[in-house]
Image 1 (cartoon, rainbow, N blue to C red):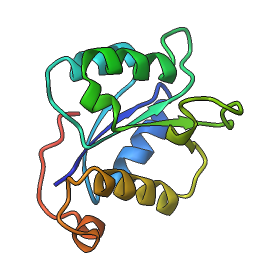
Image 2 (image 1 turned 135 degrees about the vertical axis):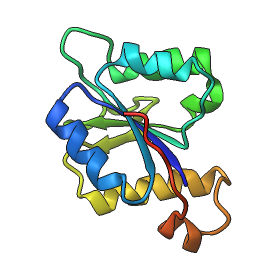
Image 3 (image 1 turned 180 degrees about the vertical axis):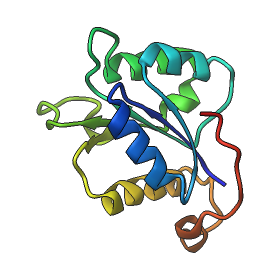
Image 4 (image 1 turned 45 degrees about the horizontal axis):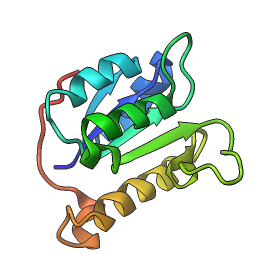
Length: 138
């Protein structure tokens, strides 16, 4: 089963998203970039990381991406940034942005595309059904 890390300081949003996505993937969640970087440092590689862009009084989603790029480049390649606004024209991370208010189907499609484009699933048909089991650690 695919693994997903959700990083968001909005407890209600993070828990709701975790609950919905845990039907198809193993979900781990973190309320802060700092805590999430600790998880990345354990060398566990998540198939996808969803990170909020803005955090109250802490590191941003962009900071998370840049630090992950330095710490674990292969993991940085699997980061999507959740944001309530669109990135600036010419932003080098624009392709990683996902609207925070995107319908769950759209978000799921981005997750499938990211894992499929990286060759971590056998076929698109199997990716849509993500079989297996997990024991979430959160």
